[in-house]
Amino acid sequence: MRAALTALSDELKRLRAGGVKTVSVSDQALAGLRKIVAARAGQSGGNVATTSTASGTAMTDARKGVLAPGGAAPSPVEGRAGISVSAAAAATSGLASQPAATTAGATKLPPPPVVSLPPGDKQTRWDALLAMIRSDSVCVQHLRPGKKVVLGVGSLDAKIFFCGEAPGAEEEIQGEPFVGPAGQLLTKMIQGMGLKRSDVYIGNIMNWRPDLPTVPGQAQMGNRPPTEEEITYCLPYLRAQLEIVNPDLIVALGSTAAQGLFGYGSFKTLGEIRGNWKPFAEKPVMVTYHPSYILRNPTNRSKRAIWEDLLKVMQRAALPISDKQKSFFLDK
Image (spheres, rainbow, N blue to C red):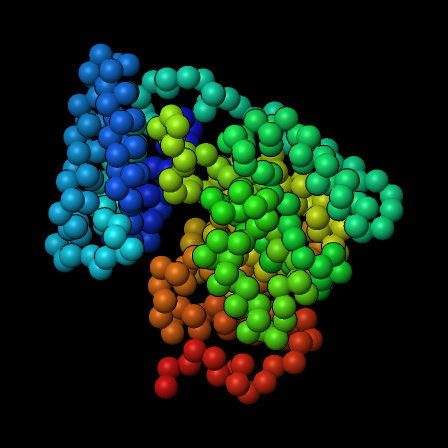
């Protein structure tokens, strides 16, 4: 649990540094946070004053719907409250600093697996890879009851390999990447390129959904970016998929995917490398925003930024580009 809270706190700090003022949090997630704070207070004899204060500040901000520090009310998002990123980061950071209730969340992962694919055609090798992941004790250990490991999907002869970071709630249920809201948007982007989802290959670096602390008996609310250790463990399975598909190029969706491919600390902001070609596994990689960025910023400007990257992908993949496609999302 401590490892998950630390990762969540780091992500909130990253968002704050990038200028994000609030995050959307459901009432159920807030209730879960209150229970975690209360439980930690009981385990440590009530010595979590700082944590409780920070969490309380975040929850108060959410009830009031206040942006900190600007004071402007956030726009409602499907009934979810806006929490100050600063307060939320302080809350989770304080929780992460408390002694862990169990050692499960702090367990170090073993060395990454050595993946050796059998001979045979692409489908045979892909099926063997799926069997390896399903029998991987580390992958299985990180699955919640009733959930599935996730391997890539699409054409094993695809020229274009879309790479995301990790499964979300819908993905771990279906065992398929990019089937939630961000995945539906990615499908539309692929269609805008004149392709079908079945024409490309879509995968993630991670094969399981990174966990967050949950109230017993309740489903996990929200996602967190995978840690460097988690990505390092799953990376051999991504390389195996690349070996099988052998695409002409890769599209890295978002900062976490790019950090996983090129190494943590290889860049400070996505803007430094977005829209540029970089090599990975002897394949050219185009780095662009994750589709969820559009869901958070549904403006023509943000849509055009991603589309310009995809136009470069289309050009490199020798796909036809019409005048209509060239003008997508340009301000009129």
